[in-house]
Image (spheres, helix red, strand yellow):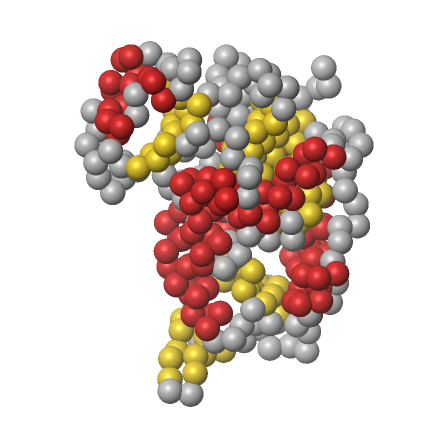
Length: 332
């Protein structure tokens, strides 16, 4: 069974369904008990395990042959599960079941062009973006110094990201013909101190941030690339930028990636992630919000506030999952 049905599906407590797979199992080990401690049942259902029954009288849903009628669904599908998950989230919403991280929110966040366009519409895009499938359109003249960062149009986790610096780099990039997999999103390289900042937001409220350092002489800062991490105190500027970016993207539990621009001394919003791997302080706040939203979504969206916003430096390793503590960077 791909799903995690370790709670009642038909009990007296409100039921939250997380539509997801097990790639964030470590998060779920923290999040689910915290939700249950707040009086809400929670299960994880894999998109391949959810069965939809349509009839003239309406829609019904089963998993493992058992009927299920959640009070709230949290969409957490990405990569190969994005399309089937989006379909199911849309059907669930049409059946009158409240959905957070709905189909279009997840679709827009995973597509770099749509993500950038929403940032631009809210005045948060401070660099040019070139996106499409015709790679011959990208030349060294796109940026003043000829250094460009390109990412796949769709994707996550830093997969397929590259930096173009030389004429040979651009020539190799442009040789690939247009295809469904050739979509790209390009932006100028931002001179930075070898790190970026991931700010976590819950219902658009920033609650926790961390630095992500590139390993050695590399420049890719994703944790999966082997870099190091450290707690980052939330400043008023980071709080403002991340809150605005989260609202622009519509993410309920979001990860806003922000760069420190050494040339201007300011910050640059790179992108907003709708399904970020989280850390314990984020998961505690998420549990608080999701439990409240499962009981009364409208009230939670209008009145919920985080219990603690991490604005002070805290070097406690327990702020991070045990699996990542070996990546913690000593304070400089």
